[in-house]
Structures are given as structure tokens and as C-alpha cells.
Length: 232
Ligand SMILES: Nc1nc2c(ncn2[C@@H]2O[C@H](COP(=O)(O)OP(=O)(O)OP(=O)(O)O)[C@@H](O)[C@H]2O)c(=O)[nH]1
Ligand SMILES: [Mg+2]
Picture (tube, protein in one colour):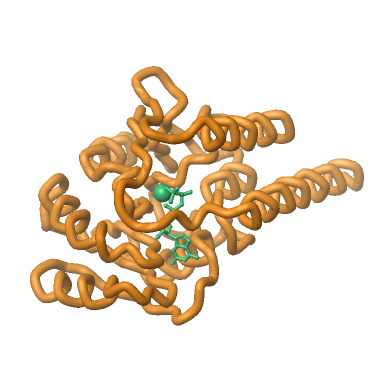
């Protein structure tokens, strides 16, 4: 059994189209979708509940905006044992890539990342400042930690087991894939190229606060690695 976790805040304009498409690309056998929603007020809940009458779709409502990483972690706790994928609701992560993500897990990889920054991948529709922020955040991570992948800032990922997400995520904000990488250097990583498209519907939840959370997270992880190394 495999689970696709989709964190949502006000994604009514997207989830209603995304979920049927997910099942179209990967079939309905052995597959369930888990939407982890933080207090959407735009009808997202109704859309997901309606879809759950037709598909193997579940909803975890949390009532407050607690952060994407925390949504992923709580979703992983609820997920079926077995393979888990995580994707955004806004079509930046197209469901056409899901079959290949799961195929790579079947080949024996532990973590498979949908990567914008390898040959064949890319970003479409982002303003220049978003590209600079993403590349800057990636450069910081690469300077501070050994990186087995080119796109540790991606949020499109499949993992062998939900435990990988449950045990690695320590911060509620974003960039949970980076946390997985920092905490698990011995896992087997693969990347597949994806074309990331900027959202066309719904509002962005990107903020300066999330960027600051990110800097605090990498800073803390770097210092604790340094302290462990010095005391070893
Ligand atoms: N449950 C939950 N989901 C969230 C939260 N913040 C963002 N999301 C969802 O996480 C996914 C990624 O968020 P986005 O707003 O698309 O963030 P982004 O991709 O960095 O920025 P844009 O594409 O510009 O909007 C989307 O499906 C959001 O609805 C949160 O605090 N809780
Ligand atoms: Mg997005």
C-alpha cells in the first residue's frame, strides 16, 4: 500500500483537479491520498470530502496553520506502512512524475526527489527573485552539509517508509526534504528531473518568516553537527 500526502491551506481551486489526476496517472490499486489541511476557509475540506466518496482519499484536519513540515510529519504518522510520496497541491509538482518516483523506490532507493536542478529538470513561471531565493537557499545548504543531491529544497519526494519522515522532521516550517538529508546521510538517494511550474491558482504561502525559519533551521543543524563532531 502506498500513500500520497498533500498538505493544504486554501487549495480548493487545485485539489479537485489534482486528486483525480493522481489516480489517473498511478491507478487506484494499493494507493491512497491523505490531505493534511490546516484551517482552509475556501471550501478545500468540502472538495476533499466529496472526492473521498469516489476515491481512497482521507482528510486530516488540524484547525490551525502549523507549517508544511509539521503537516507532512503528522500525515506520515497516519500514512499506511509502505511507500509514501509528498507533493504540493498547486500543480507545481505534476502527478505525471509519480510513477517514476515510485519506480525508483522499487529499484531499491530509500528517498527519491523530484529535482529541478538536474539535466532535464527546470522551473517555469517563477519571478527572478524566487529563483534567486531558491538557488541561494540551496547554495547555503550545500556549503554547510554534505549533499548527495542537487535539489535538497524540493518538496516533491517519495520515501521507502513513513518512518523516514516521522523521525527526520524536527522543524514545523518548510524544507523537510533537507531535514531528511541532513539527518540520514547513509540512505540511498535518487533524483528524477521535474519541470516545476509556478502555481496558477490559489495564493502563495511563501513568506519572509519562512525564509527566516529556514536560516534558523540550517544554522541550528550546522551548529549541533559541529558540537557533536567536537565532542566525539
Ligand atoms: N497543511 C499545511 N499545508 C501548507 C502549509 N503551508 C503551505 N501548505 C501547502 O503546502 C504546499 C506548498 O505551499 P505553497 O504555498 O505552494 O508554497 P511554495 O510552493 O513555496 O510557494 P508558491 O508556489 O508560490 O505558492 C501547498 O499545497 C500549500 O497549500 C501549512 O502551514 N500547513
Ligand atoms: Mg507552490
